[in-house]
Image (cartoon, rainbow, N blue to C red; front, side):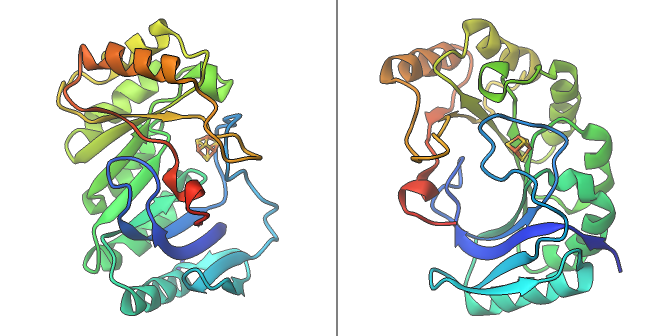
Length: 245
Ligand code: SF4
């Protein structure tokens, strides 16, 4: 079976997006092709072990040598699934789509246990198609340069959304105080469906965990997007308020 570099495996509460507050199993991959300046899960050295929180909230960690085999990951997922009841299983990162060779082994047996929730930068449609049959819910980012410090990938996002809209999908926009109207208008070029949920998530300060975007800016962005979309919500990273993983 395949192997992959993982950062963490744990059971916790989803802190972002439309499923905020739902209990999930999380599998956090270790690499990403992007370098968002707000990233709170930057790539670690490959030799660092994968942390498994075997009892939620008790800080009892088991360390697994990296890379972790698909067989071992499936064992841990099944154990957490037996210990706690969950809404779904979140594959997050890093960018999970860098590991489609591995996910193709993991997802078929796991999807029979729990719905598969994919958290992705939404920039790699060619990789997504390899695992599309086993994905149930997609939390798709649209990366805005004012927050990421990188260029916007409008065409890649367009191609990704054209596939993602066949599933249950919502958009997460991480925004900064400087996010512009032009950037918000790119969303309209990428997401033609007016009923697609749009989640505005203010950048969190990496040191303090505090929101960094003013109320005035958030109200403006929310109202601007609401002119186009039926379901626009402002949701900060709530797991950080609760000191959860
Ligand atoms: S896409 Fe996600 S994991 Fe990758 S750099 Fe950006 S925030 Fe970090």
